[in-house]
Length: 263
Length: 292
Image 1 (tube, chains in turn orange, red):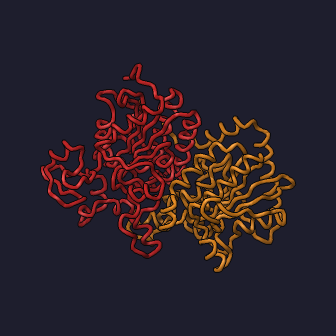
Image 2: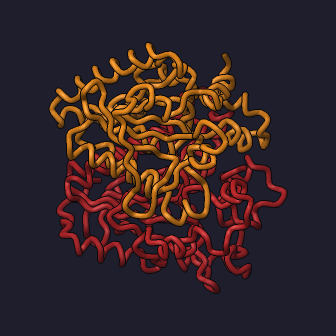
């Protein structure tokens, strides 16, 4: 599969979304919590409580919607500032109750629009990056489709970041990159290749810890094994002293990019 | 949609090829300059004497990092950090090596940010200033690394930090690695903040994208120069997305002030005085010794 095939696969409307993951992994134990307590309830972000094999967890995910009606409601998974603020509110709540946080990322990017700018899209993302870095509870983020730039990163400052094998994660969309670089959006496939945005590329670059098999909605077994894997990771991170956990999270990002002084 | 293009003053757009105009100095190297704000023809020497502010309309021309350091740091007090750190083409992005080379030549800098320690009105501070002439202040690994190191140094030495931003956002030529700098710098800012140390940001034209969505918006106090573009998504990106004309004055410093996202709009003339005043209100140490 070429990099652009992966982009297409990541955007495939038939791919399981955050809602599918929540339904298949948590079933009736999931209780959705709404609103950022400041402005509104952004439906591009789903958040709530769930039981992971008996362990209470906070689950937060970007949701694109599974049909046209849902996609309109969910704004195609592009969150406004209130979506990121809802996510942060639920993370702070998780910290208070010592619950681990599980994030699902699937977005083409934070929404670009008048309201989003007026309400501080940049500030909302920046605050999440800062606060997640020192959130005193384990965080795990899984990219299940598209990871579009800052809007994805705002839910992916975590102890570990995993990706589905056909998910992508990039600083800019291949179309955007092609139009800047070659003034030609139709060269998106070339741009996708250049950007090194596949799970396999990112694993090599040391940006993610694990590549996961693509689940199908009917495939219960794969969701079960994913649950086990997540539970083990949370158990390991919950057993760490908080200082060590936060030091490791800081260093996880601190070491990205090879920088040595020339002299 | 070319982020760099929409950030250009309009009079620079016509007939210019993207590559050659990208890193051109913002004030032409001739005796006369046409003001981007009011169109008046100004004598170069007049605006240089006036901190590159239009004498007719108050338009703030962009400053290079060195010009701004000269404006803010006490005379001869600036000791630079990591001047030798240089970006590499880590993901083999096409044409990036050439772009780095030409940016270095045109800006005279090795990266899009200059960091160091100085005194400001006698107060000891760590100062980071972004360089518009280096790929429009875009954030690559080295940009992120230099800012992170500056914050770590400030935390260790209990110093306040002043960051002057000017940026088109994350640098796509470094792919995901540039995106990760947003998290890395934010982590360093958070540690500095948790140590109860002061961080002031000065937003200048333009501050957009990944820089807005990370350290630019993380200051305890956020100042901006007048009429600067302050945005997450740039106006042209938004216009393309929503297919609507944006209202006049949208995403200017004054607009962002009105929406509650910055503390004050400060003219360049008053910038140093304002910073010194704010430092004075935070029990910041007066310099004992300055590193040279």
